[in-house]
Image 1 (cartoon, rainbow, N blue to C red):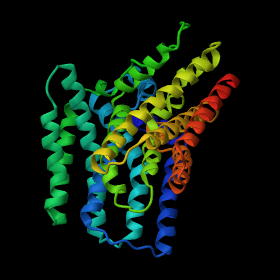
Image 2: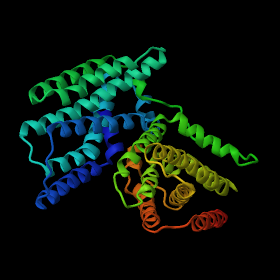
Image 3: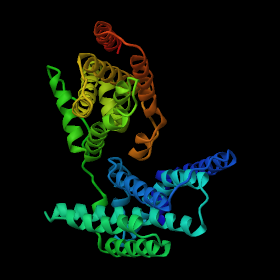
Image 4: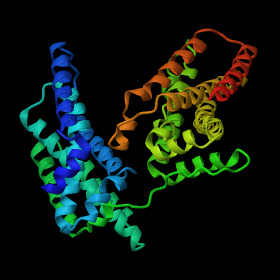
Length: 410
């Protein structure tokens, strides 16, 4: 309990004020939507799938958070029993996942549809099972990597056993029995796990060196994206969305909806919070002379490159599925990618996110919607009016000039 209490205070605050605020937000959200009498027909499988997949994803991101090393340093310096440490960590991260993230989503689902008591109980059981399963998989993955063993087949079989019944079985009792069995297996697996698999003392923070040229920082950012699998996975997911989106937006006839896809694809939160998620990097950039201009320029070019890589997938998919991609669409992609990069860097430089506990707080911070919303408005204006390629070229030139002026002021 001492370990759980210590970690809980770090995650929720000294007086657990964050947990209280999250629960109050859940109640307000439920009452507001329920009072408005908003009703949506929804199958029970959607509720169970959301509770399972969402909780599992948040728990996995929480366990892989780079801030856990600093958070656990003091804990692992004290004498502890292996099982007590393991279950204290799992329970603390599970509580954080459920209270601050999952309950908000479930409150929305409970408000828009009338569910039975059994369905609500099974959804909560599925959410808890997801957190424990993610923790068990996390220990298995790290131990398998340490001993160079294969762990992917176990993940596939275990994950299939959790998700398949949601779609194939309609009886809530059977689904609850499967979830309970999976939770029991996770419990037995965690009993044998080494608590040190949760502790990663080596940090991959940036140490900016005084080197000539502008390529070193860009290469670091590129390596940072590749080595952080969560960040890379988000970019890969956007590429998948970019490949499917033309077939969805192409259904709207008579309206140029193609630019709206570029606005949606600029919602790549992980690459836009590199200063917020790494205080050591921010301190180095702000204190070392001459580094602000170099870093911001390379950081802007880095975000622009990633945005254009995703936009390229979108353009190729649109050309294959719908056709009609010309120089105007390509320049539109350049404008939105560049403008998104400039605004993202300015937000990170002048308004970084502070006082966060877990990287999930950064990923789900409301600030992440500011730039995509602006880009959505810009894309809507471009789509409404037939703008010539020369006007678009002038906008690109203006973007580059404004970026150079901003960098000089920084």
